Amino acid sequence: MIQHPGNVFVVSAPSGAGKSTLTQRLVQEVPDLSFSISFTTRKPRPGEVDGRDYFFIDEARFDAMVAGGGFVEWVQVYGHRYGTGRDWLNGVLATGRDVLLDIETTGALNLRGAIPDACMIFLLPPSAAALEQRLRGRGKDSDEQIRIRLQHARHELELYGAYDYLVMNDDLELAYRQFESIILATRARRERMAPVAQGILQGF
Ligand code: ADP
Ligand code: 5GP
Image (cartoon, rainbow, N blue to C red; front, side, top):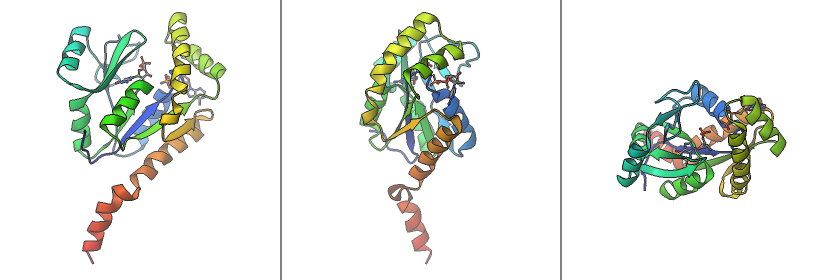
């Protein structure tokens, strides 16, 4: 079990729903929020940077991390492996910063076992057709990759019931405001703020 002073936010969604668009803006605009950088055996897409978007590692190194218990959770999807590094996550949380993890549903459910008070947010596309349009419009995946991603999308959507919040990304600005509100409201929860309230009380 991971003990931590920071909040953990998990966001899952079918590929193409707009997670990257929203999470990139959140980490820029919400103070004290870090984006979790996962490890993957997938090759970088054009424009992706090692150590910023992912830690891109080979199969052997991924195997070694699995064997050494180096992942809080890991999965194999789309023919590649993805995992949340235990040391990386502990390191950021220990500084008191909140962490936002963009991980798929199976990994998210496993993560909740390790971090039961993680705030779980599911991002819904407006429709199946809109999702396909966005994947094509993004222009980063082959037709075959898009077919596989759409098939997987249905399985991911079926798991929405395991999440605390469902945010629909139709109007981007509204989705952003909802997302940001969830983060800010979670920070104000009584159990998080009780130590602060106690500190203030002691000043009287
Ligand atoms: P994900 O990270 O979930 O795979 P992206 O953030 O890459 O998805 O978004 C997929 C595509 O959809 C991108 O081209 C993005 O600009 C576009 N997009 C994201 N949100 C919206 C929205 N609310 N309306 C229209 N297009 C959007
Ligand atoms: P992509 O290849 O589009 O960057 O990511 C594919 C899927 O892997 C996305 O649904 C993304 O959320 C998920 N993913 C990325 N990193 C991790 C991780 O560390 N763990 C898990 N479980 N899923 C991840």
